[in-house]
Image 1 (cartoon, helix red, strand yellow):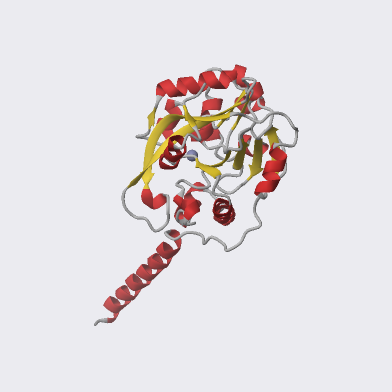
Image 2: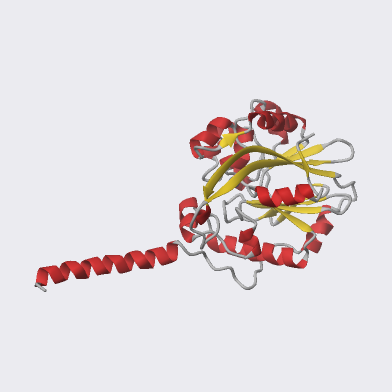
Length: 306
Ligand SMILES: [Zn+2]
């Protein structure tokens, strides 16, 4: 072989080797550690949830406000083909005296189409969610991404609901909150919540700081009067398999989404162990309709809002 030709081959082989190394990192997940220090124990959560002695909530409901899909390869590392259906849902906690709390606030049609083209808003249900937010005693979210929060920023009743919105400092000022409509004007009308580690939002309802997927991510623990327990994990997992295996999505998704993959790996270990030790604790993965269908079928969650 002539010298210049040999050099071209060497460069090409070098490029292929670099690409192979890049892909082997980008398409594999941050490993889940064997142990984690993350998060409170379930007994701590139960104690805080019941600490005021006031009545715990009696109902846990959900509503679907939209549907979409994303490549399965972006949801669980090692899966390469097909699309994973996504559901956009909000939740309602109801107390015996009729007070309610809304958890996650959905997404308006315009923001959904702009950020996840091809997704479909269920306009009737979105309108029902907006009406439920007007009646709510408090509105909290798992994190500041548009599909969980723009229903607040773009609410037609924003003036009415703003005093009841309980968003953390990190959520209101998160780097992606602007995409969800949290402009300077909107933010100036919200009173940020500041807390460390855990916060009792209402009897039976505990917020747990869990930055990683976004800086403002938090777990929402719900304990009902009859002993039913739920842990809303937001988007720490996009499918329950992320927790059951446990295995995260590929690093490439961490990079594109600005996620802290190491923090999420610890959180997935925490959730995996919680589930293993306490199967009666119902984990709620925000976009996993298959998981929610199981909870609905067992009568643990009711469909539609009141
Ligand atoms: Zn989401």
